[in-house]
Image 1 (cartoon, rainbow, N blue to C red):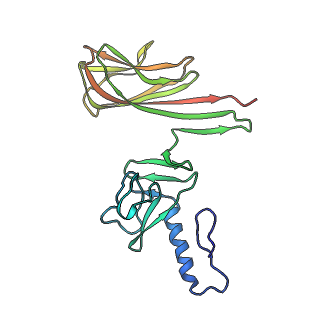
Image 2: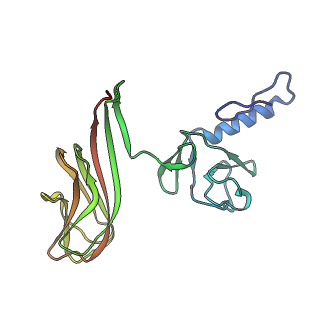
Image 3: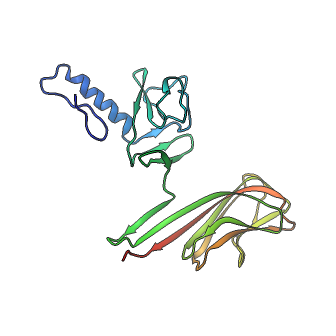
Length: 239
């Protein structure tokens, strides 16, 4: 019996008996693969009590009933595991981490941190991008982070969250070398403290510029802060 090219849905053959079996199998596969939302993408062993229709992306070095199915989509259907081989361009929402994964033809990779909102036939583009990293605070009055504003970026703002308590100062500021408070001041040091540093107007940068943290009242001695840079990029057309 032949299958469809992309989703491998079974076709009903001419004069086939029990056509409903083939049709129901195809509908079950569609139900599993359309608008994919998986529970997790890191498990290497099947869950003990899966619910009907739940799906997972099988983790590396899978064991048990998932052995040999690394990277495939495992769906619990009618009391058994059914596995699907992903194709290039498939995307899945991961409930455990609340992010989107894309399949590049070989592996599942993180979904895009940028979106092209306009594109000409010659590839002139307007892109909105967000870059995020965790910065481990080092001792001193200020830290220039690895979160660097690209040359010619138009920045909407910088956001942040304290992951582990910032020790040393009573508060801190978020900005750049030329303006240490551009994206926030008097920011809390306790874990869970946040900053949402919105630019008064979108600000253009004409050279690569690191985001800077500056201590208030005393030097930094430690802590971890998650930072995200939100900006617009203009790309010129091809020759």
